[in-house]
Amino acid sequence: MKKTAFALMALVAVACGPRPAAEVEKVDLFTEVGDNGLLVDAIEITVSNPRSLKGLTAADFDLVNNVLGSFMDPETGQAPADYVDDQITVSRNGNKLRIDAKPFNISGRSEGWFKHFPWELRCSADSALNVTLDKVNERHIAVLDDCIKGSFTYAGLTREYMLYLPKDEKGNVIPNVPLMVWQIGGGEYDKDLMTAATANRCLVSLATEGVPCAALMFAIANPNYSYSASLDPEKIKLVDRNNALQMAFIDQLIAEGKVDGSRLFCAGASSGGGCTMRFMMQFPDRFKAAIPCCPMDPIVPIHMVQEKYEGQFADDLEKAFQDKVYKWNGTDMELAPIDTQTFVNLPMYFVHASSDNTCKIASSHAYIEARKRLGATADQLLVYSDEDLAAYGIPPMIAHFSWVPLLDDYSEGSVMQWMISQF
Figure 1 (cartoon, one colour):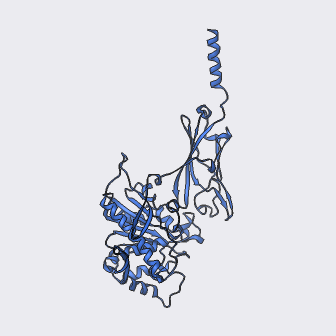
Figure 2 (figure 1 turned 90 degrees about the horizontal axis):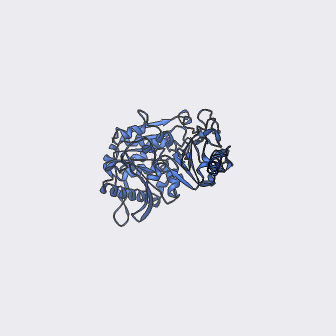
Figure 3 (figure 1 turned 180 degrees about the vertical axis):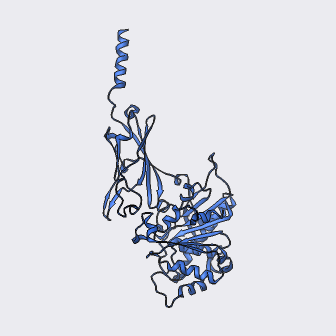
């Protein structure tokens, strides 16, 4: 009996003794796509000895170099600084410890162009639970992890794609939903699929808002077509070929019952805004509405050139909208007439920033004016001021980033609500 009592006391002493150092087996990072890359939402640490997690609280943890995922702090107008309140919460499930926090930039904090300070999770109770990005074993990305990834071949091209299909409460894919196809910007051209998918919120915007709409994005595996590409028939043929491939894939989705062919929408920014315009010129009868954001000029030269006379850009576009585009004939891309009347009847909501120096607002004004002359009555234009962009952490020097407020704003009267109202 005495031996049993002593043994029991020994076990109690061990159980109540100092917490042993954690033996980390795995670190998982949970992220979401932000306005300018990935944001970290939570860190999950798996240990081999669960007792090492006993009694840990949020007060035992601190995050360093955790900043906003924007270019500047909207409140101060300065470079983002470490959060005053990390909003850390701690939860435990067996041998897993999860640390949730206010979302922060996965790249950490920067000072200027050349000084970078990676984020760190520090544990004052046990340094074995300290985490840096290089200690992460597996990364998870909200929404994108649920996307279908693949490749598609058509019109002599093979392109990778990422497709989000909404699901019901039971996790089943909802059939015959609306589709928004996003045309990527020039900065994502000739990059890998994940770089394109995480550059902005194009694939996650609707899903995060809980809108039952499919979202599609193709990685364009060729160099950006650049300014005044309309003067180079081969570049324009390639733009139209990429669009023909996307349309063929969309037709496949329609045939499979995944999306509703009567509720197709297209949006894109910068080079993607220009490609959106050409897409609508090729297939105006297939789409219900389009959102060209800060569009470039793959139709007539506008950027980096001066008008020879006031109204020249609109004159040139008016002529181009009644001309031809390239279409796939089963063997090659060939010029075919534009269905101008259907094209101008297609509602478009243009989005631009007044201080955009990359793709100047003259393009949106010229597109709208030319379409108006040809009979368009439903076009609209939203112009962001410097103050509007500052509220999203965008300084005037990069006023080109008007897709950030576009994809973030679902308030009454917003462009995204305009699109949703047509579902």
